[in-house]
Image (tube, rainbow, N blue to C red; front, side):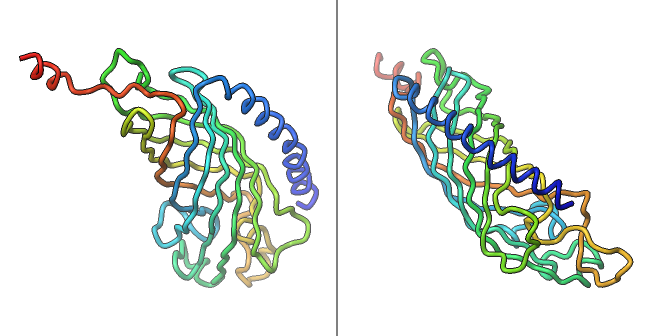
Length: 245
């Protein structure tokens, strides 16, 4: 177990220079392209041995800032920094009698740096359409770090890789500003977000979880984006007809 965890952590650290290199390339090219900046507020949700599914009791506040480059009318590239609290508790969200006997909890701070591609399903940037909104799908790569856990195994790193993916919705307020709502999952490759993993099943102290089921976390929230170019924001055709009369 120790060898595998260290290998994953090492890969995450090796990927970090690549992450920065991609960011610099995209940032330099984006200066001559359609670019956007924005921020969002929402929450982190943990899923693992202590909690399953979407439970409002285990959502903790989080925020994000991002830079986006629009590669085409359908595809965008986004770089983001997201941070917030992540927590779980057997007492608040027991998933079975085993969890009630374990009675474990955790409360940590998580920081994430991510690069993702977004694909927009509708032609909301096309001047020939009257659409002011679009759903989109995103996926990419992330590195996250955690702090605040006083007792944890020494063999795993607090910096780990993750695969972010999810979907969202954008609505144009005016040619420079628009609103967004997003829900995304982060697939991790280790089982210690909650500091509960494998244990000796012959010792019935219940202080362990399922070592074959890695932890996940989610970010959900709303965002406000400023565009450095003009997004087509069509007026109502009924108003035009009325003025002609």
